[in-house]
Amino acid sequence: MTATPAIDGWFTTGPDPTLLGSGCTTCGTVFFPPTSGFCANPACAGEEFEETALSRRGTVWSYTDAQYQPPPPYVAPDPFVPFALAAVELPDGLVVLGQVAEGYGVADLHVGAEVELVVEPEHASDQLIWRWRPLISGRVTEMGEEADQ
Ligand SMILES: [Zn+2]
Image (cartoon, rainbow, N blue to C red):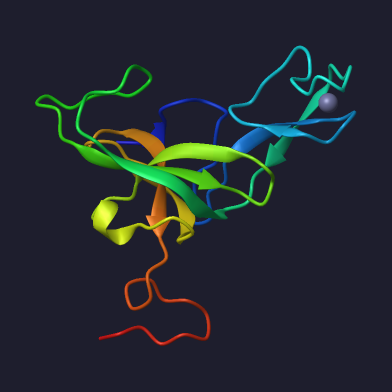
């Protein structure tokens, strides 16, 4: 079984996955999901974009428990299993919504918490989606930091 991104061209896979946005070549504004056509910056007349890898880490801007099934492209398991969602502010100047990584929930989140992008299979399928993993001391080993045993 080869795992493939659920949405082609929105993120890379591998050990250090990144989201792929569109950077306006005129004003430098970065958009996610990837866009084309006209720049959404009202002060810019740009129409050309280049693929831009977004920062892999950001901070939680808002979060919630998803108790109801979201609309597509979310692929709901049957029965629907509630999960945590985080809106993450990236240094690139945008906020990207995503599920919280497998094994984590709202109890692991707070506004301002640092999170890192991971790519995980959705509901044991071969479809990969991006998620935000909280960087919690003792659970994620950082360089120069000792992991709790
Ligand atoms: Zn622009």
